[in-house]
Image (cartoon, rainbow, N blue to C red; front, side, top):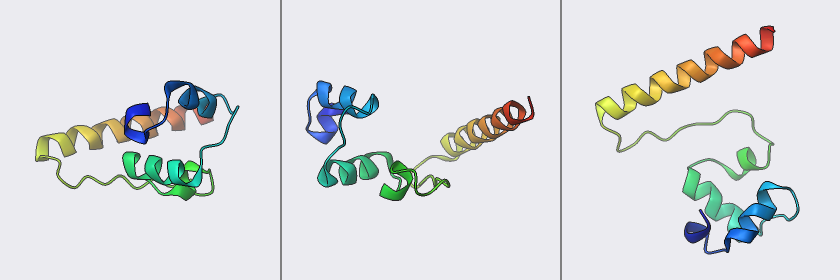
Length: 80
C-alpha cells in the first residue's frame, strides 16, 4: 500500500492508528487503489460498490460468495 500511495510505511501506520490524517492527494489515491469513493473512506457513505470489471466469471462468482458470507456473518453478529 505504501508503495502504491508513494508514502512510507510509517505514514500508513499513522493513518491506521488515527495518529495522522492522509493528505487530500493521498486520500484520492487510496480511493482509486481500493476502487471506492472518498466518502466511503471518510465514513460518510456506508454503502460500498465493488467494481468487478475485468473479473472472470469464476472470480466474480467467488467474490459474490465471499460478500454473501460476510453479510450473513455480520447479520448473525448483530443478532447476538
